Image (cartoon, rainbow, N blue to C red; front, side, top):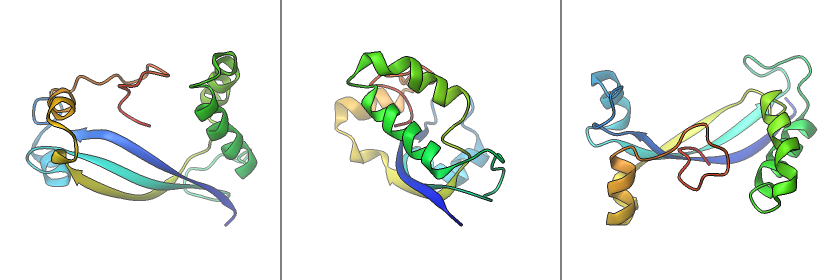
Length: 128
C-alpha cells in the first residue's frame, strides 16, 4: 500500500489523577500513567481510510502543521487541512515511556493533566 509515515508524540497517555483513568486504562498505561510515542502510517486502502485520500495530501497537511507553528499566516490553511482530514486515517505502533522521562517540574504538570486538548499551537497540547 502507498502511504505517508510520520512520528507522533503523546505527552501523557494517562494519569491516575484524571477522571477517565480506570482499571482498564491502568492495564494499558500502568498504575502511574505513561507518555507514548508512535510511528503512524496513513495508507491508501488502510483501515477506515477515505476514498479521496492521497499520500501527498497527508504530506502537505503534516508539513503545513509544522510550518504553521512558525509562520502564523499559514494557520488558516493548515486548519482547513485538519478539518477536512487531509492527513487521512492512520495506524501504527506505539511505545510507552515511563513518566520519569520528564524533569520533575514538567512531570508534575503532565501528571496533573495540565495539558490542552484541541487548542492548536499550544506548547502544552497533549499531542504533537
